[in-house]
Length: 203
Length: 191
Image (tube, rainbow over all chains, first blue to last red; front, side, top):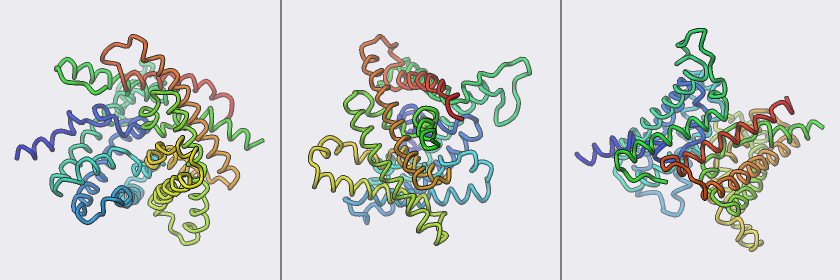
């Protein structure tokens, strides 16, 4: 039971992607110009993570060791095609906004990383929980970055205007350089907090 | 003339790394030394160009006639993964020197989103064959340029006094942001 709880919460602080676990940077930078897009991307990745971890864990004794990476990629790619079709059918606006970054979930290193590090040697239920936990952490991070960039860069949050007409938005935050700098500063703050709590910070 | 403009736009204006955010994991991972960055950059140019040609041909001559466009993602990643394996075996067999130089970077390239991204962008922009070839080579060259510049800056960062909590990836991301800002200066060159 304690194992279950530790797996459930590790993705939310200890291995929070992409800050504590510096993986999956491309979507974290590319789609976080607004909170809505960040959250949509996070939820898509969560869906793929839960089911790829579950499938890989169920098949872990059948897949030969030598072709395991290739098999994982096929499983992940199939799930991504599924996500693409669901988004196109029910969330057309979002799928237009995310564009090529949806098919690029295939090469998101978080998913392959969790498959190799966790699902390949743990039972099915626990692996699905791990996918859920890491996915939730990723969704949280992307929504956070998206919120900061959208509120300061455009003056809105989830499309709702927040600031008055006197506020001049930092337009550079919604452009490419803003993404890098915003993510870098959040990473620095998290390191500072981790150090303050006396943890060993990954360099 | 259009092809030259396309190349300039892909290298400087819409730099794949600094304006489109593709290929950031190897960018942060292998850019600690100039020599490894050069190896990675050359390997990406080589694989991205080959992969783009193959995926473009498969897309227009197999997937479109058979109306299988919706499994594009699955097919593309399979092509890239097997191509990387094939290139590795080929180089090991026929060109020992090149294999020693690029060998260790090849497996990393399968999960490099720049390669997959270029292949997808070729389809999205509906390029013809030659446009596709020029776009792929110049996008990958843009990646190499950015990673080389970044590695040189990072070698300097090692010997400078960065605040403790900003060390490592945090300062690297901020540096990349400032580089991206300077690349935005090219924006007026090509529309």
